Amino acid sequence: MDDLIRHPLAYARQLRGWSQSELARQMRDAARRRGLRAGTSRQRVSVWERRVVPDAFSQALLGDVFDVPREQITALGWPHWLPGHEIPVALGAGLAVVVLRKALLMGVDRRTFLALAPAAVGSLALQWATVEPAWAAGATGGRAVDPAFVDRLEESARALTGMPTALRQHAGPLLDGHLETVVGLLERGGHPRALGVRLHTLASALAQTVAWHRFDHERHAAAHRHWHAAVHSAHEAGNTDLGAGALADLAYQSIWLGRPRAAVDCLGHALSRTVSPTARSLLLLRKARAHAMLGEARDCYRALARSEKLLHSTAEPAPGWCAWMSHADLAVDTGRCLIDLGRPRRAHDHITEGVGLLPDTRDKTKAVFLAYEAESLLARGEVQQAADLARRSLGLATRIGASRCVRQIRDLSGTFAAYGSEDGVGLLRHEVLQLFPQDIAMAT
Image: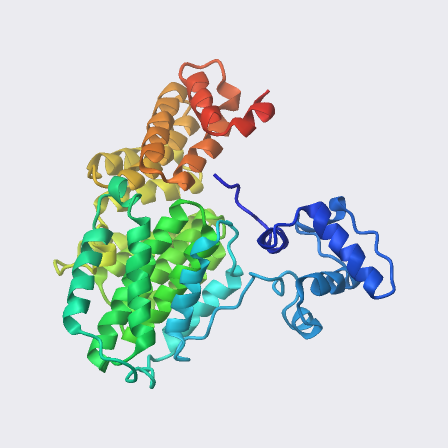
């Protein structure tokens, strides 16, 4: 598993295969080409990657090294001008297919830096909430697309995206292939508007599923690109609930990466156009979690209450992307909010209830929920039970191949350090260190 790349400078240099020392050498060479001298060292690059802003001269040298125009450096500011730290394509520009193609091209990128700035997530959501969809004018050229072939694509895509989590981990190449086929049909053109809507709807649904596959394997930049593309295609198809689902997933990623304010802003815009009560319930539940992380208890409780009311307010079928939303999710995420708000005893009751209601087909969600339950038990001083649940979560996450869930337990296991003599803690730490041998030196 790759460690999460936490700064765009690290992402930019690793795109080129450079170490910190090599980047420093490149900058010294760039200074000599200007007839100047620079004392850039590996240590200085390391400091910049820990959120210290380089001075103007150093940024100019970095611009030379990464071939970025001075105007772009000045206009965007540090670190947003760096390669990979991109501004999302505007909605309504007829570029949905271009965005999809860019997401597919990122399939070979194993790096794990989140390429869009947090503010860009809110900007995309704001566009989605305010820009009306317009059918692309160039969609009628090229060879005709056979509607029967689209029928088959839709049928097989439903089978792939509906797989249990334990099986879907093996379907990544199939999902990529389906999305590649759909994007190729859109690029070819030759379809009437109704068929184009179906293709964009299918592209959005597939891009969302592929994004989750990337996200579970901690390829955060690629996941972000696919969710971004899913928003564009849903917008092109005029499917507001599907677009809200992609925005909700972007918000969830922001929450997972510790950026709750970006999630709050994104979900606020997404709710403005979401119609389905179940979809609105899910968005509000994620918004509650972001408020809890920010310590905004009143807003959190208000969002939780609205989410619960909406979940039980209708019998109409939920959109496919959120058909799994249930009382189990509401109960566990309520407990997670209570943990964040410093109320672990109340949290445990909610989480235990939700975990008990969760079906076996949702192993990945269960792994995450068991980790929450372990955290709530540890906060109550029930160390052995907490360690046992953390080991169950680790086993599930390992079996389904979700490295982000494995890393969640790795991070949680560090909080057991003060209880090393308690039953079960040593076994938990041993199992974690088998998966992360690089932690052994730190542990000793």
